[in-house]
Structure formats: C-alpha cells, structure tokens
Image (cartoon, rainbow, N blue to C red; front, top):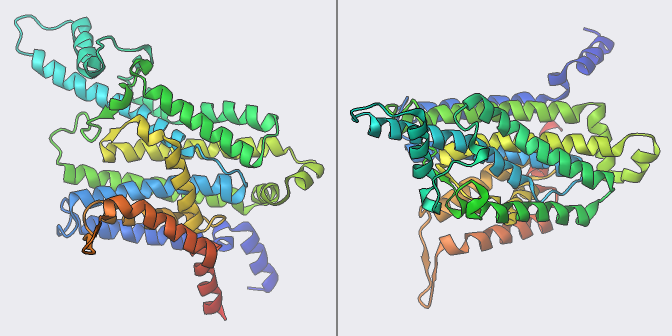
Length: 398
C-alpha cells in the first residue's frame, strides 16, 4: 500500500487515528472478563460479591469522570455541579426501583385478605410504606410515572439534560466564564441539595431512597449474579461513553472546543458560535453523568441528598486533575485509582497505624491523604498520571 493510500485510510478511519480507543476497549473487556471468571456467581469465587459491586461502581465513576474531562479538560468549563446530574440520574431510576419493590411487598401482604385489594388500596398502602418515614402517606405528583420503567429511564436522560440545558443557556448566553461560572454551578448544586433535604420535596428528605439493590422481578436471583450483571452493564456504558467522547473530540468539533478552552475570544472572532458549542458539551456531559448515576446507585443500594453536595463535584474535579485532564484515559485512571483506594482506606482493608500517642485511622485521614496526593501531582506531575503515561509511550516509540 502506498504512503498516500495509507494516509487517506488513516484520515477516514476513526480507530487508526485514535489507537488508544482500541487499547482502552481491549483492557476494559479483559478486566470485565477476568472479574467475571473470578466472581462468586460465574467463576472461581476469588472475588467477593461486595468487591464486584465496588468494581461496578468504580466503572460508573470512571464514566462521570469522562464527562467531567469533556466539559473541563477539553472545553475549559470548570463545572462544580456535575455530580448533581449524577445524583438526579440515580433518583430517577431509584423511584422506579423503590416503588415497584414496595408494590410487590404490599401486594404480597394483602394477598391473604378475604376480598382482593382495590388499586386505590394498593396505592395508598404503597404511599404509607414509602413516605411514612417522613410523616406522609400521599404519593407526590412527581411519582406519577414511578411505576413505568420506560418513562423513568427516559427521565434518567431528560431530567439532567433539561436542567443542564436551561442552566447552561442562561449562563452562557450571559457570557459568564471562569471562576464565576464555577461558583454558579456550585450554587446550583447546593440549592438542589438543600431542596432535596426537605421532607416535602417528594423524595423522602434526608432519608433518601433505599433498598435499591432489590431489583423488582428478580428477588429470587442471588445478589452475586445481579452484581455481575451490573458490572457488565457498567462496563458497556463506560466503553460506549469513552467511544462517544473520543469521537466528539477527535474531529473539527474537538478542535473548536479546545480552541474555546485555550482562547475563547479568538474562536468567537473567527465566527464560531461559542455559546452553542459550550451548551452542547455541557448538556451532553450532564446526560452522560445521569446515565452513570442510574447505574451506580442500584449497586450502592441507597441515595440521599448528601450525594449531591457540592463537595462531591469538587472531588470529581480532583480525580480528573490527578488522572490528567484533557486525556480521556487520564480521567479514567484518576477516577479508578481514587475510587479503589478510597474503598480500601475507608473500608478497613488498610490497617490503622498506632503511633503511641495517637492512632492514624484511615477512615478519618483518607481525605487528608487524597488532598496531599493532589498537591504532589500538581507540583511534580502537572499533567497528571495520564501525562506520565504519555511520556512512557513516547520513550517506548524511540
């Protein structure tokens, strides 16, 4: 094949221009297959069900890290509110999970009556079961479609997407940028979190939604099996999300959003609709975050307003910075590393260190360690772990 033909093929082939995508998908497939073969459900039982769930949740956090890298690392919008979209996705699917599971329990408990219960009686009993903890019994209007899986799945995409579209349109139309935009996104997240903490929000206040690991219709299926199913779903979502993000940043569109990140006034001067590009990326990444949350919280089993607190979005930015923003695989590395280390340090897998006069308990000191790691990466590896990977690859090519 001639050099001209090879160059033409590379220009047309997405994967030839982005070999790292194939490498990432191959590694993700191997890790998923290996975890499956070592699981208690389908393998030799070397990995516990709880660890399989941790892996599944980690993949979901990697997906939202990709979204954060798209909006911040590539487009230059430091959003401190993307975990709100993540939480909203969890709430949308959690409403269906909790409603249908409660309905099964109610129908089973009323089955022994002389007269079969009416739909109204079942609905009243469901309302009492779900909202009795906050002193209510009426099912709020926002739960009107909670019995429809199709509608709630649509809400997983629509609710974060519409919120991001409305917020982004107002902010970008007003040309709010830099730290002011970051403060606005943080304020949005805080306002939403404080609203959900109220008992009359319709989402059980600070109690949140619980029992989400109990999948309706699958009560007889062991959690070991369900955890592997969610691992597969999380891996598929991460692979598709990575592929989509790589496609978005690989062509002319990617060059434009990089230009917005580096010199927004010049891109606007060249005639590009900067606000439209920023709004698209902001909305797209909110949808990706919502999907990640919808897969995460059934594995976590519970969601409450604390999950939407601004500190969660700040942690998300730290993960991406540690991994290396502006590199999709860097965001994945950062999220996976921090998630697994957090699980180890806060889950009792790393022993505490007695110093005689005091004891270092990692549950309390983990955030300090994370902050210290962030400072070290900022000082000695400003391009993150992904930047170190790039240097190793370049040395290997020489």
